[in-house]
Amino acid sequence: MSPLYLRVAAAGSSGGREAQELGRGGAYPLCAIEGSRRDSLGFRAVRAAVRALAWTMFRVSTTGLDRIPGGAAVVVANHVSWLDPIILPLVMPRKPAVLSMAELWQMPGVRLVMRAYGPLAIPVRRGAVDTGALRRSLAALREGRLLIVFPEGGISADGRLRPFQRGAALLAHRAGVPLVPAAILGTREALPLGRLVPRPRRIVVRIGTPVAVRGDTAADLERANGEAAAQIIALSAAP
Image 1 (cartoon, rainbow, N blue to C red):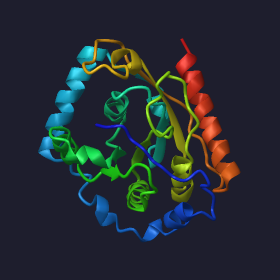
Image 2 (image 1 turned 90 degrees about the vertical axis):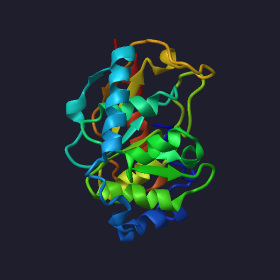
Image 3 (image 1 turned 45 degrees about the vertical axis):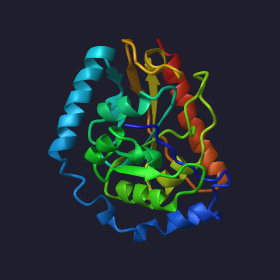
């Protein structure tokens, strides 16, 4: 898996172009994720191998999985290592949709993994508002899927949680679903920036309480982001 990004302009309000595109998201054909409920044999084999390796090497554990809704939700997490987008989908109770850098489809090896993941791996162009990725994400949510987003927009070099971009909250509001905070601990120690080979370290994923997004104004989105971020900080600091 790859780092997951959702770039929406800081304006992010109901009057912005991004919000207008999301407002038209209901017209986006669900055939974009057709067949996503029937995982390929290739995906199942890749997932089983990666999961077995991760659980052996990192002794992955989770808390709070029962807080994840049975329906759709936008899972927002801290991002401190390239391992984050590998570990987080593996611990979800069902296969989530994920936003992935479009460049990964050009990388040998990684491209095969992304293709094996199927239509729920959504490539997004960095440095611009990718309306196609936004619409596919909204379609996945409206199908009842979980959607994983790292709303900081990149890896935090010092491990501190950076301000969230507003795209994830805007998607949640448009789909009528909550944000679900997730704190990932130990990945930075296992694979810090600049290191190519991961080392054995314990990894823990802690899930917080769902956060409702009550509107699509800048204030509404910032409020929801603030609540989700506060939970991630608290979960990360808990013993």
